Figure 1 (spheres, rainbow, N blue to C red):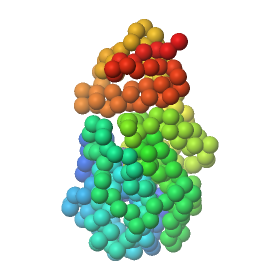
Figure 2 (spheres, helix red, strand yellow):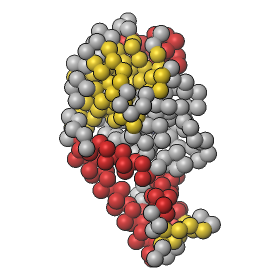
Figure 3 (tube, rainbow, N blue to C red):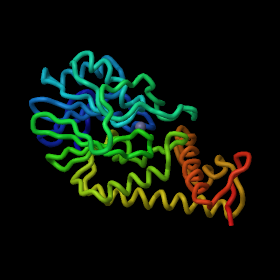
Figure 4 (cartoon, rainbow, N blue to C red):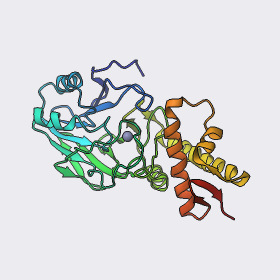
Length: 285
Ligand SMILES: [Zn+2]
């Protein structure tokens, strides 16, 4: 894939263009990719952060065409905040995931949650939004967040995979809203589909997506096995596990790695394989 320039819409196929937001970080890779779907009228998927220069770039890419819907995969602050000003500028409705139901009590990861998100219409699994020559159908894929939706473009068999499956890294699954069992079930849900290509919110398009999804499931199973082995050696708190499991990781990402280990532990505890007392985790049986 060609080098992407921030703020310039890049066509990927006749119905799809992407536009990179100016928010690169250790959590967003090169930044959030906004997708424009349609030719005569549009859907804008995940308009991104509420940054004036970025909004100007999105409006320039829209180029006066009617926007049928601003479509939101989930409410992390690098995805949904531009929905409000963009709705005001274009008159489009905001549709997509539900506002977050759980309190954001965990430590701030990624850019945190967009608590001001206010959709005009919440889409449930299987609900659609359409325009001239395009139909997007929602696919509920909890795990990265409880409200996460992917969107299938029915006409071309493409899937906008949001942060559920990304082109550069595995997803952050951070409790309390992130849920490892739900994430694995949502990966399995994708495996049972036949999408041609994924367009993730971060990273390049994913061809042969089921191979990547299978690899991601294998990666999590490996992590799970690693955690069980460490706990069989002896009881440990999460930071001690992270130290052993993530050698050489960017220190900025260590807290996220800790949340991810915690997500595994919560899942393993629900399955009766580990126990916790005073933040020290132990193997059961
Ligand atoms: Zn996210």
